[in-house]
Length: 243
Image 1 (cartoon, rainbow, N blue to C red):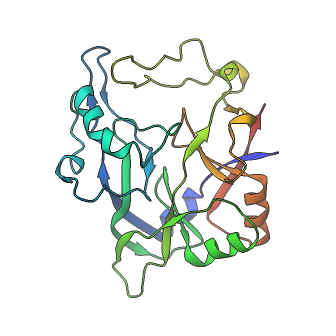
Image 2: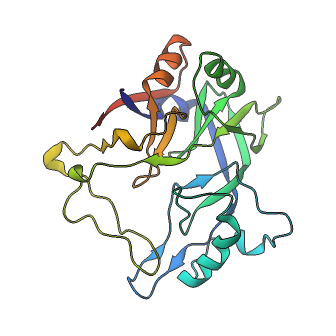
Image 3: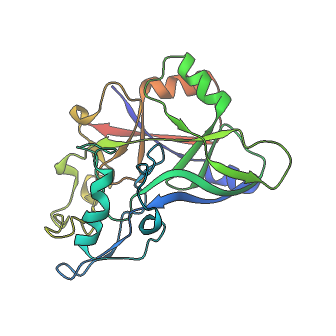
């Protein structure tokens, strides 16, 4: 089965529209005295996940780094909502997008390079053509022009795993205290491109993120064929190697 990296057509969309938004809640970043890392995941988001009823939202409104132990304490009430093997790292966003938008929008739009949105019409047509596992989350976005913001954010979970053969020997292991890896380095001698393990792809989902590179969204051949048949615009598709 062929696999494709799906990304925004930046030249087109940034000339015509703009979204300024962020997810309602997040796990704070981490400040780890063991490995020296301060920060968190930048593209890991679960927009369909809401805070459990009765949980104080205050600690989830601030991204300022805290200790690894505090991150684990705040993550515990969310773990059952984001079951293993899905990661729940410092800096993880969740809940709907909240913000403002202006301009003209096509079939797809990214609020940033990690956060894809699709028109409700395009989403329904993709489902009608048999594309699997598509979950749309209605954002709380106000348009500066008249009319409703008829788009949803795609809830895309990280399942795809990289083949270790495409990584350099310098790719670090996660810190045993905070769980953060200092970065994934793709071996330039192998073309500098990710190689995805076919066995890590869930058959019931046609859009997934890469575990080690959560900003990378992958689409199956079924999704691509449907998008081309519908002539959906504002995306770029690059084939990715699988083993």
